[in-house]
Amino acid sequence: MTRVVILISGRGSNMASLLAAGESGALRATVVGVIANRADAQGLLTAAARGVPTRVVDHRSFAEREEFDSALAEAIEVFSPDLVVLAGFMRILGAAFVRRFDGRLINIHPSLLPAFPGLHTHLRALSEGVRIHGCTVHFVTADLDHGPVIIQAAVPVLDGDDEALLAARVLAQEHVIYPQAVRWFAEGRLRLQAGRVLLEAPPAGAGVLIAPQPDACPRC
Ligand code: GRF
Image 1 (cartoon, rainbow, N blue to C red):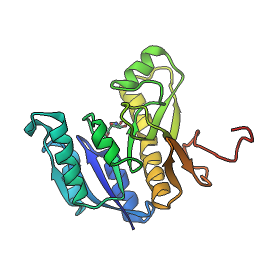
Image 2 (image 1 turned 30 degrees about the vertical axis):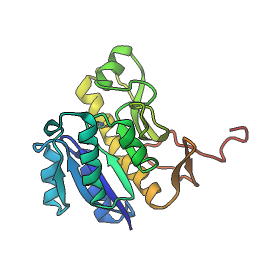
Image 3 (image 1 turned 45 degrees about the horizontal axis):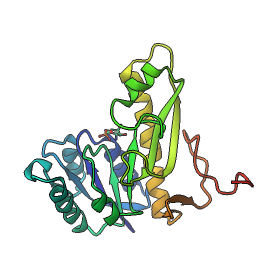
Image 4 (image 1 turned 180 degrees about the vertical axis):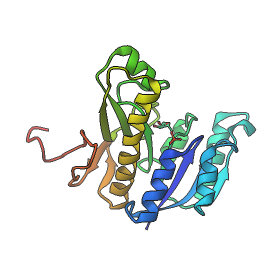
């Protein structure tokens, strides 16, 4: 069974959706540990209540970013994971960390990358007046919010939307595509090769508008 470690910083709703998919068998993977960089991350309670081992590696205990990164990497390795999943993990990880977990480190970002990397994505989408917004699961590279895209879901931006309404519409799709991406990885159908995502025979899924389809275009 594919072993997954999830890193969080706060609420942990994506983590909870992954735990639920794991428990139902839909993930084809086991979440073997949850690590937070803050002891007050709400998601730690959710994970513990479901019997998942939790750890805290507090970034404030380290003078240098590299020291935090390597303590975090060591805490992760204790669980011997096949896949490391960033789910609302609010620390930037250095190049050495990213290299160490190359091809087995994924993130979810609340925009249709490459649009709106960084913070406040929903507010920025509203202020730019885009009509389509969404979320992206991608492999993590040293470039913040710019790794190879695994799966995206799009939602409409509706008249009368505010940040909270739009965020909730996107979040509902996050909870669909993140378990989907982890399942593809667990099934051995998803991998990173020479910086590109390879996905074997992706099925169509609810809310999934864009996914790599190797056979779809004869010229691609
Ligand atoms: C999500 O919107 C995720 O895309 C972003 O941070 C938020 C985390 O939410 N990276 P939660 O902690 O999973 O509820």
